[in-house]
Image 1 (cartoon, rainbow, N blue to C red):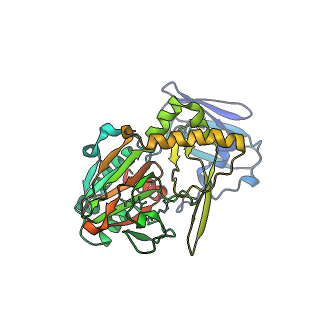
Image 2: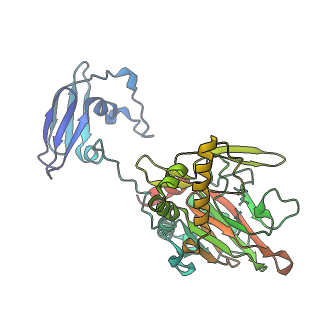
Image 3: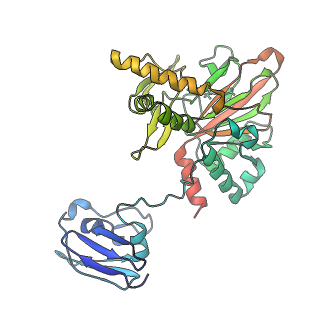
Length: 369
Ligand SMILES: C[N+](C)(C)CCCC[C@H](N)C(=O)O
Ligand SMILES: O=C(O)CCC(=O)C(=O)O
């Protein structure tokens, strides 16, 4: 970068970059981000903000277009910044995040044939295949890994290519099977309407992995819908319902002999720009609603409307997992469910685990380096 020009006043350094763009850097920000204030090996911040004056001022600033040098008043500190780094961190613009590769919202038209698929050996052995798989899993919120070995380790091996497993009250891994004395409906053979798991947790698990070991019973098909697509359609068709579901939290609770785990969540969660970033929807573990009575009635209308949309075939993709396939989905975006099955007609067994979004995004950033 050549010929950047500088102006500075009592609060900021203003830089006109050669390409016509410009940036404003407050002095306190520059002083706080002096490269010398970071540990050379760990890259952690070691500078102490409280030792700086908020009115810190420069006595002299120079740039040769590659490096910007500042002489500070008050002490003899001289800070040197790389201009490309400065530009990439221009205050007021978010630095691009390589883990955020974009979303494609989908509806029924995607069909089972549109679900991204990848071979388990490719993901296990190739970083490029791993990266491409993570990108498509994030884009659609789900994917299927094929040709897993026929043991309960195989799905975990794939999940661990991403990162640490998220342990919950259901264990580090879990067996979705019809069991005696079930502590939740997943462990029966009944139909499960579309839902997200563990909305009763302070942080609901990010990605869910369900490795199909056997699916021989009649029924037992899998259901999926894109919660983000439903939320965006609701935003347009019923702004009042969207507003309530994205601002009013409701209680969720799971309890059994050993646990009583509760959390309040909005059904639709937005970031500060209003983008949908999480769906928490699980009718079976919604606790008794405790809203103020007039709000209650408005909320029920909104909540029921969202529920009706989750039953609308326009959003539904169905498939029947085969032994050796593993479905992977963002549990905080894509709702999942299953048809009832008849355990008398054959064995059905899914082996599952979770990996949180933070692990997933970290792996993606590292693979994009
Ligand atoms: C069995 N497995 C661990 C996968 C899910 C458990 C879900 C438990 C709770 N009923 C909920 O729906 O969130
Ligand atoms: O049995 C299935 O296909 C899905 C089970 C499920 O929804 C769950 O474990 O949360």
